[in-house]
Length: 412
Ligand SMILES: Cc1ncc(COP(=O)(O)O)c(C=O)c1O
Image (tube, rainbow, N blue to C red; front, side, top):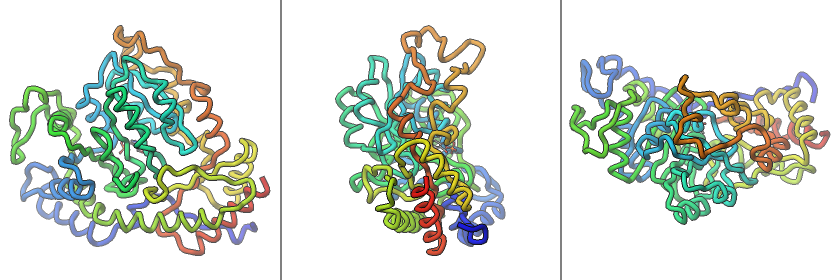
């Protein structure tokens, strides 16, 4: 590939490419009405309520709670599910720092389980990691694609352990025709800029369980519930210390529009990814991530699996030289890999009390997080490359990308 035909490869901010005058007009509505807070203002706030209403309909769940971030949604959900000292929470080796951080913030101990060739929680290793202290299982639908929820739920049910689905990277995805986030007791989403739909920063929690909804509501707000927007006493089981994680009207306004565009955004991502993957099929030495449900994949990432680490590194270098700048060696994909998170590997405490690692209640949970803790996952990450598929690619960009990847893999 010569310098002059270097590809112009956009960044992967799916929802941002779809912002238009619809989002503009609702944001102006918030500003003109002076109603930036969801419960009162100079005018009548309505956008966060509207977003939650649309979310209930879109996911088909009884309750939807908008929050200020996906991280906030995780911490709130764990509070609602009673995660605390003495608890272990199982997460996959391919994750995001915020998910494991939410466990630590809850003063519980993260337990990392292997991923299989789908790059999501390996149900067989999940079962091996269960102990009498396991309080929660957190499958993460990573890099756009759903976990095998049948196998994970079978293990969870057998051991009677609740499931919190982290759907931050797979909004709108499905497994067996059912939306991710609707399998576990609670599902959470992030609306940060890199996600399938966005309002810059934001989160969402969905559940069918009224008690969990009340507990989440109280935890995310002021420790009480609200009736018609006014604080009201919580039922005994839900009274809590509030975390101040409400969504703003500005964010809610954008989110309420973006959720109506999500099917269109996903259709574009899926079509691009399908064309690129099809065109790459048959390239010597190239394999792909196994998809648990190809129809339910949301499309923002393609994971390439090579024969060994040296070939993956060589192919990655060639792709970058040809202008595919934002591609990643999965092993070095920052805080998405358990052993790359310094505060996890070093068990950095939350405070000088040494919590959670040094709490008396956690002394039986002794886990190591350095590379080698999940050897099968480490080996898979070492030979894999993650290629983000930006929204609204032109056919020319797709064709160029295919050529670059083919040449890079064949020469590696
Ligand atoms: C898997 C996963 N979980 C949780 C989060 C946290 O979401 P937020 O950035 O909205 O706090 C992210 C964000 O990147 C994520 O990728």
